[in-house]
Image (cartoon, rainbow, N blue to C red; front, side, top):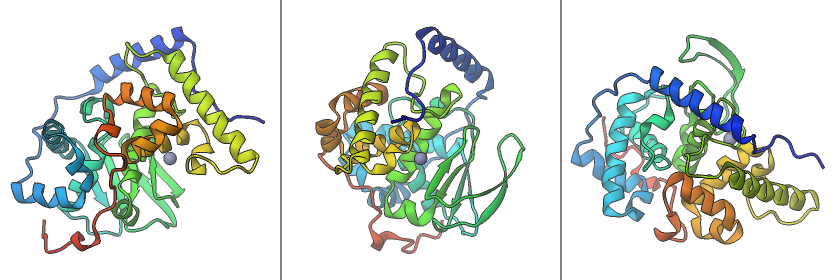
Length: 285
Ligand SMILES: [Zn+2]
Protein backbone atom coordinates (compact mmCIF):
# COMPACT_ATOMS: atom_id res chain seq x y z
CA UNK A 1 0.00 0.00 0.00
CA UNK A 2 1.04 3.58 -0.49
CA UNK A 3 1.13 5.77 2.58
CA UNK A 4 0.63 9.37 1.52
CA UNK A 5 3.16 11.90 2.75
CA UNK A 6 5.64 11.31 5.56
CA UNK A 7 6.52 12.58 9.00
CA UNK A 8 10.28 12.83 8.50
CA UNK A 9 12.98 15.08 7.14
CA UNK A 10 16.75 14.84 7.28
CA UNK A 11 18.26 16.38 10.41
CA UNK A 12 20.06 19.08 8.40
CA UNK A 13 16.84 20.07 6.66
CA UNK A 14 15.01 20.22 9.95
CA UNK A 15 17.64 22.42 11.55
CA UNK A 16 17.73 24.67 8.48
CA UNK A 17 13.97 25.04 8.44
CA UNK A 18 13.86 25.60 12.17
CA UNK A 19 16.42 28.40 12.03
CA UNK A 20 14.79 29.96 9.00
CA UNK A 21 11.37 30.07 10.57
CA UNK A 22 12.56 31.09 14.01
CA UNK A 23 14.33 34.05 12.38
CA UNK A 24 11.34 34.79 10.20
CA UNK A 25 9.10 34.68 13.28
CA UNK A 26 11.34 37.12 15.14
CA UNK A 27 11.30 39.55 12.22
CA UNK A 28 7.59 39.37 11.55
CA UNK A 29 6.11 39.34 15.03
CA UNK A 30 5.14 42.86 16.10
CA UNK A 31 5.08 44.02 19.72
CA UNK A 32 2.17 42.13 21.31
CA UNK A 33 -0.91 44.25 21.99
CA UNK A 34 -2.20 44.62 25.55
CA UNK A 35 -4.18 41.48 26.46
CA UNK A 36 -7.96 41.61 26.71
CA UNK A 37 -9.06 41.34 30.35
CA UNK A 38 -12.06 39.11 30.97
CA UNK A 39 -14.31 40.29 33.78
CA UNK A 40 -14.94 37.83 36.63
CA UNK A 41 -18.46 37.30 35.31
CA UNK A 42 -17.18 36.56 31.79
CA UNK A 43 -14.60 34.17 33.22
CA UNK A 44 -17.18 32.40 35.37
CA UNK A 45 -19.48 31.96 32.38
CA UNK A 46 -16.59 30.67 30.28
CA UNK A 47 -15.63 28.09 32.90
CA UNK A 48 -19.14 26.63 32.70
CA UNK A 49 -19.21 26.67 28.91
CA UNK A 50 -15.74 25.15 28.53
CA UNK A 51 -15.86 22.33 31.11
CA UNK A 52 -12.28 21.20 30.40
CA UNK A 53 -11.12 24.21 32.43
CA UNK A 54 -12.30 22.51 35.65
CA UNK A 55 -9.81 19.69 35.07
CA UNK A 56 -6.80 22.04 35.01
CA UNK A 57 -4.59 22.66 38.04
CA UNK A 58 -4.92 26.11 39.68
CA UNK A 59 -1.63 27.22 38.07
CA UNK A 60 -2.68 26.02 34.62
CA UNK A 61 -6.07 27.69 35.06
CA UNK A 62 -4.39 31.04 35.72
CA UNK A 63 -2.06 30.52 32.76
CA UNK A 64 -5.01 29.69 30.53
CA UNK A 65 -6.82 32.87 31.57
CA UNK A 66 -3.73 34.88 30.67
CA UNK A 67 -3.32 33.11 27.33
CA UNK A 68 -6.99 33.69 26.44
CA UNK A 69 -6.53 37.44 27.02
CA UNK A 70 -3.45 37.45 24.77
CA UNK A 71 -5.20 35.38 22.08
CA UNK A 72 -8.25 37.69 22.02
CA UNK A 73 -5.96 40.71 21.64
CA UNK A 74 -3.90 39.24 18.79
CA UNK A 75 -6.53 37.45 16.70
CA UNK A 76 -9.51 38.88 14.83
CA UNK A 77 -12.85 37.06 14.87
CA UNK A 78 -15.34 37.43 12.01
CA UNK A 79 -18.79 35.87 11.97
CA UNK A 80 -19.97 35.01 8.45
CA UNK A 81 -23.77 34.87 8.43
CA UNK A 82 -23.55 34.86 12.22
CA UNK A 83 -23.78 37.68 14.78
CA UNK A 84 -20.74 36.56 16.76
CA UNK A 85 -20.88 37.49 20.47
CA UNK A 86 -17.98 38.09 22.81
CA UNK A 87 -18.75 34.97 24.83
CA UNK A 88 -18.49 32.87 21.67
CA UNK A 89 -15.03 34.35 20.96
CA UNK A 90 -14.05 33.60 24.57
CA UNK A 91 -15.08 29.96 24.14
CA UNK A 92 -13.09 29.58 20.90
CA UNK A 93 -10.08 31.29 22.51
CA UNK A 94 -10.22 28.93 25.52
CA UNK A 95 -9.91 25.81 23.36
CA UNK A 96 -7.39 27.48 21.05
CA UNK A 97 -5.15 28.25 24.03
CA UNK A 98 -5.19 24.73 25.49
CA UNK A 99 -2.49 23.35 23.12
CA UNK A 100 -0.24 26.40 23.61
CA UNK A 101 -0.82 26.67 27.36
CA UNK A 102 2.89 26.14 28.08
CA UNK A 103 4.25 27.16 24.67
CA UNK A 104 3.03 30.75 24.54
CA UNK A 105 1.20 32.67 21.83
CA UNK A 106 4.17 33.16 19.51
CA UNK A 107 3.98 29.59 18.21
CA UNK A 108 0.72 30.66 16.53
CA UNK A 109 2.84 33.12 14.52
CA UNK A 110 1.31 36.03 12.65
CA UNK A 111 -1.91 34.68 11.17
CA UNK A 112 -4.75 36.74 12.53
CA UNK A 113 -8.22 35.87 11.34
CA UNK A 114 -10.73 33.33 12.61
CA UNK A 115 -13.85 33.05 10.44
CA UNK A 116 -16.87 31.51 12.12
CA UNK A 117 -19.78 30.17 10.08
CA UNK A 118 -23.09 29.18 11.69
CA UNK A 119 -22.97 25.55 10.59
CA UNK A 120 -20.94 22.85 8.87
CA UNK A 121 -22.39 23.08 5.43
CA UNK A 122 -21.26 26.20 3.65
CA UNK A 123 -21.50 26.64 -0.12
CA UNK A 124 -18.83 28.33 -2.21
CA UNK A 125 -17.27 31.24 -0.36
CA UNK A 126 -14.98 34.15 -1.12
CA UNK A 127 -12.60 35.75 1.37
CA UNK A 128 -9.45 37.83 1.59
CA UNK A 129 -6.64 36.36 3.68
CA UNK A 130 -4.19 38.13 6.00
CA UNK A 131 -1.88 38.78 3.03
CA UNK A 132 -4.67 40.52 1.10
CA UNK A 133 -5.02 37.61 -1.35
CA UNK A 134 -8.51 36.93 -2.64
CA UNK A 135 -9.74 33.31 -2.35
CA UNK A 136 -12.76 31.49 -3.67
CA UNK A 137 -13.52 27.92 -2.60
CA UNK A 138 -16.05 25.44 -1.34
CA UNK A 139 -15.78 25.15 2.45
CA UNK A 140 -17.79 22.13 3.60
CA UNK A 141 -15.94 21.03 6.75
CA UNK A 142 -16.46 21.59 10.45
CA UNK A 143 -13.21 23.54 10.46
CA UNK A 144 -10.28 24.39 8.29
CA UNK A 145 -6.88 25.99 8.79
CA UNK A 146 -4.77 27.59 6.11
CA UNK A 147 -1.07 28.11 6.39
CA UNK A 148 -1.31 31.92 6.44
CA UNK A 149 -4.82 32.14 7.89
CA UNK A 150 -7.67 32.35 8.21
CA UNK A 151 -8.77 29.53 10.49
CA UNK A 152 -12.33 28.62 9.57
CA UNK A 153 -14.75 27.15 12.13
CA UNK A 154 -18.40 26.16 12.21
CA UNK A 155 -20.14 27.39 15.36
CA UNK A 156 -22.48 24.40 15.64
CA UNK A 157 -19.53 22.01 15.51
CA UNK A 158 -17.55 24.11 17.98
CA UNK A 159 -20.45 24.12 20.48
CA UNK A 160 -20.93 20.35 20.08
CA UNK A 161 -17.25 19.49 20.46
CA UNK A 162 -14.53 22.04 21.23
CA UNK A 163 -11.96 19.46 20.10
CA UNK A 164 -12.67 20.78 16.58
CA UNK A 165 -10.87 23.99 17.59
CA UNK A 166 -7.87 22.10 18.95
CA UNK A 167 -7.78 20.12 15.68
CA UNK A 168 -7.58 23.28 13.55
CA UNK A 169 -5.05 24.94 15.86
CA UNK A 170 -2.81 21.89 15.59
CA UNK A 171 -2.86 22.33 11.79
CA UNK A 172 -1.60 25.90 12.28
CA UNK A 173 1.18 24.62 14.59
CA UNK A 174 2.00 21.95 12.01
CA UNK A 175 2.31 24.72 9.37
CA UNK A 176 5.01 26.44 11.46
CA UNK A 177 7.80 24.96 9.30
CA UNK A 178 6.12 25.81 6.04
CA UNK A 179 4.18 22.64 5.29
CA UNK A 180 1.16 21.00 6.89
CA UNK A 181 2.46 17.42 6.92
CA UNK A 182 2.14 16.06 10.47
CA UNK A 183 5.62 17.26 11.41
CA UNK A 184 5.52 20.55 13.34
CA UNK A 185 8.70 22.47 14.27
CA UNK A 186 10.01 20.60 17.35
CA UNK A 187 11.96 22.16 20.22
CA UNK A 188 15.73 21.48 20.14
CA UNK A 189 15.59 18.98 22.99
CA UNK A 190 13.20 16.68 21.10
CA UNK A 191 14.45 14.06 18.66
CA UNK A 192 12.96 14.52 15.19
CA UNK A 193 13.99 10.95 14.33
CA UNK A 194 12.13 9.45 17.33
CA UNK A 195 9.07 11.56 16.56
CA UNK A 196 9.08 10.44 12.91
CA UNK A 197 9.48 6.77 13.85
CA UNK A 198 6.63 6.80 16.39
CA UNK A 199 4.24 8.72 14.18
CA UNK A 200 5.08 6.81 10.99
CA UNK A 201 4.58 3.46 12.76
CA UNK A 202 1.29 4.47 14.38
CA UNK A 203 -0.03 5.98 11.14
CA UNK A 204 0.98 2.90 9.11
CA UNK A 205 -0.69 0.56 11.66
CA UNK A 206 -3.91 2.54 11.48
CA UNK A 207 -3.88 2.48 7.65
CA UNK A 208 -3.20 -1.27 7.61
CA UNK A 209 -6.02 -1.95 10.12
CA UNK A 210 -8.48 0.03 8.00
CA UNK A 211 -7.29 -1.62 4.80
CA UNK A 212 -7.88 -5.07 6.34
CA UNK A 213 -11.32 -4.14 7.61
CA UNK A 214 -10.33 -4.22 11.30
CA UNK A 215 -11.87 -1.85 13.82
CA UNK A 216 -9.54 1.20 13.80
CA UNK A 217 -8.31 2.37 17.21
CA UNK A 218 -8.83 6.02 16.18
CA UNK A 219 -11.40 7.92 14.16
CA UNK A 220 -10.61 6.67 10.62
CA UNK A 221 -10.37 10.28 9.46
CA UNK A 222 -6.89 10.14 11.04
CA UNK A 223 -5.86 7.84 8.18
CA UNK A 224 -6.52 10.58 5.58
CA UNK A 225 -2.89 11.74 5.63
CA UNK A 226 -0.15 12.49 8.22
CA UNK A 227 -1.44 16.02 8.84
CA UNK A 228 -4.93 14.78 9.72
CA UNK A 229 -3.38 11.99 11.80
CA UNK A 230 -1.55 14.54 13.94
CA UNK A 231 -4.63 16.76 14.33
CA UNK A 232 -6.86 13.81 15.28
CA UNK A 233 -4.39 12.26 17.76
CA UNK A 234 -4.15 15.68 19.41
CA UNK A 235 -7.93 15.65 19.91
CA UNK A 236 -7.53 12.31 21.74
CA UNK A 237 -4.48 13.64 23.58
CA UNK A 238 -6.37 16.54 25.13
CA UNK A 239 -9.80 14.96 25.58
CA UNK A 240 -9.30 11.16 25.78
CA UNK A 241 -5.76 11.07 27.12
CA UNK A 242 -5.93 7.75 28.99
CA UNK A 243 -7.15 6.01 25.85
CA UNK A 244 -4.42 7.47 23.61
CA UNK A 245 -1.76 6.73 26.24
CA UNK A 246 -2.86 3.10 26.28
CA UNK A 247 -3.32 2.58 22.53
CA UNK A 248 -0.38 4.68 21.21
CA UNK A 249 2.06 5.13 24.11
CA UNK A 250 4.93 6.35 21.90
CA UNK A 251 2.82 8.99 20.19
CA UNK A 252 1.36 10.02 23.55
CA UNK A 253 4.80 10.49 25.10
CA UNK A 254 5.99 12.64 22.19
CA UNK A 255 2.90 14.81 22.47
CA UNK A 256 3.52 15.22 26.23
CA UNK A 257 7.03 16.44 25.42
CA UNK A 258 5.87 18.67 22.59
CA UNK A 259 2.98 20.35 24.43
CA UNK A 260 4.69 20.16 27.84
CA UNK A 261 1.48 18.76 29.29
CA UNK A 262 0.33 15.38 30.66
CA UNK A 263 -3.44 15.45 30.23
CA UNK A 264 -3.93 11.89 31.62
CA UNK A 265 -3.05 13.33 35.04
CA UNK A 266 -6.09 15.65 34.79
CA UNK A 267 -8.67 12.93 34.02
CA UNK A 268 -9.03 9.80 31.90
CA UNK A 269 -11.57 11.61 29.74
CA UNK A 270 -12.01 15.35 29.56
CA UNK A 271 -15.30 16.95 28.48
CA UNK A 272 -15.29 19.08 25.33
CA UNK A 273 -18.97 19.87 24.71
CA UNK A 274 -20.64 23.12 25.72
CA UNK A 275 -23.59 22.39 28.05
CA UNK A 276 -26.66 23.21 25.95
CA UNK A 277 -28.27 25.17 28.77
CA UNK A 278 -25.46 27.75 28.63
CA UNK A 279 -25.97 28.69 24.97
CA UNK A 280 -26.52 32.46 24.82
CA UNK A 281 -28.38 32.54 28.14
CA UNK A 282 -28.69 36.26 28.53
CA UNK A 283 -25.10 37.36 27.81
CA UNK A 284 -25.39 40.44 25.62
CA UNK A 285 -21.62 40.86 25.11
ZN1 LIG B 1 -7.95 18.57 9.70
